[in-house]
Image 1 (cartoon, rainbow, N blue to C red):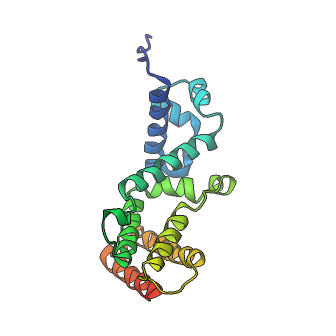
Image 2 (cartoon, rainbow, N blue to C red; image 1 turned 135 degrees about the vertical axis):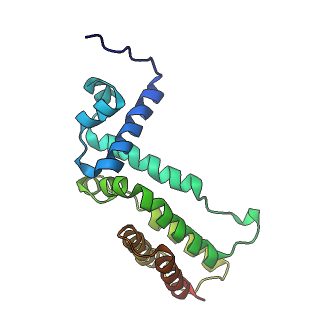
Image 3 (cartoon, rainbow, N blue to C red; image 1 turned 45 degrees about the vertical axis):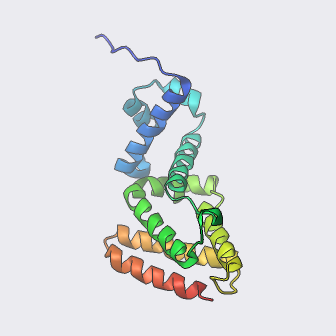
Length: 190
């Protein structure tokens, strides 16, 4: 039986092909996906997979970086140079954006943020660092009260994440987001 000829791709394109195949499978099947599934989906040899990703964790880390990068690119934080910032509205918008981004990526998120991989290769709390920076900037603009930014960000991020999980389980998105935004406003009030 003749095998179809593989098209030649540049290394970056082949690597991306593997990452995208893994993302599709993780979204459809969750953390049950294995290397064999990814190489079949990507149409590459197992050796090609390991050329780009020496371990499964290396692939998951690439997917995590890509997912976080997509969120950061889609929801950049404004700067004062762009004009005055409504800090409470920004926190509310970022929280809603996180929820709306998390829901369609739920299965991938479970595999890369809430698995053994996440314990072996913890993320530097991108969401918490981001929220901490917003709280500090909002305090400097006198839009937020005198809270300790880092622990407050950690607690608020937990509430944001739990809201995303609740919406993923079927709770009404608008009601859940409204309740969350009320909590955020009260927690950061001057």
